[in-house]
Length: 158
Image (tube, rainbow, N blue to C red):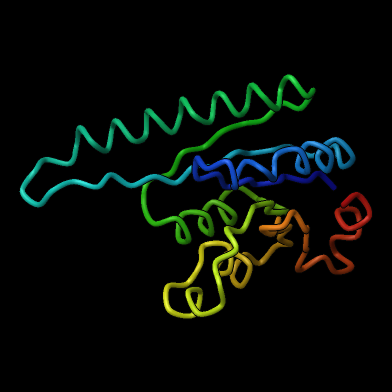
């Protein structure tokens, strides 16, 4: 079975902290890696958003190219994808449309009260991905959810 690991990145060092773990896991599984960035332009009402949309997508493509090159230096080729919209919706849609078998991402580690009020991208992906999720916590702890019998190869390599 071939594996595809989706790595959502938001441009933060916190999100990028998962990359060394992904490199190790992908090498062990001989998995494909897809780096994903979800963007959305913020513009003032009444202003044409087109230029801002093009700019944020272009910036995201450049950012992902640098991260993919970094993985390449570690001996791991990676594809990139940029999606425009709300992070949770776009990540979940990409999981379904790209035959992703594992999601690997970092959690920002917001407190329980803030997650309860605001929600969290990582928490929403964890609940709704439909595939195993490897989550890097704020102290560097890795947890996995959804690694059942159908994902035995992923579990052994993690």
